[in-house]
Length: 366
Image (cartoon, rainbow, N blue to C red):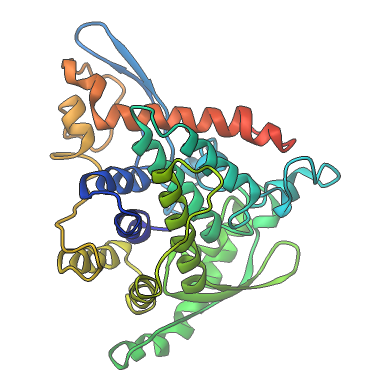
């Protein structure tokens, strides 16, 4: 999924789950920042204090950049949560490792991940961790069928797509789609043949909300994907999770989206047809500003790096990438900054997934 879903749709669903604008902003910013937190290592301050952070993403959308893609340490806990073949804890021990770590939508593992986040709802960075959890949870729908390690299962061929919800103004896109598919198929074959990691072989197809598409996976099976249906299901289950968080209910017994809200989200997903996630994101922000949803209108923005970003507020830097040689001026409010709370939550999430959650299912991951 891309910024239109991880940021804008997460915000919308959080508001529909009765979070305030400020709370929903933190949840949605954190959900999207999982894809933008690409720096790791120590932060050094002028006082001699240090802070250690981890990266939750690499430049995953640059499918030619194998140097970054090859380092998939962040993929399993943050983007390709193992699904244990859809089985509950205590089952699946007779299956192979790869079969058990294939991502599955709304798996038992995914729901246990959400439940643990709810149990920690009183933590000082609980909303930041909730946003991270919503990112991973939503990705179980988008990244289903793939694994966060290099393996043959990720190889894909016969990649073909079609848009859904085309209007008369956008019908011209379908004429070009055949030729686009030919190019994407060749590009996907190149990536799959060189490095079968994650969903690189099917490019950004799993992340575009409006797209329906097919491919043949590494096992020779034809897979049909309906992103609008999957993304709407993700939004509905996120609403259940967010309402359950508000209620402190780790059993996830809340009711999801209303029929009216579901229809509005579905319509925007299907009719916002553009390959550029930032352009789709702008469409959602306009809808939010113009009170398209029942919670009223609000101005919402997202600045990942640079001026007015969480990182700028915490460290005073406007740089997009760190060199590793910075010496930042320490401010007492750093300890309570959203940027630090987010990075603390990243580490808490990864520690829980790798050392508690996956071992509960008999899965060992780095």
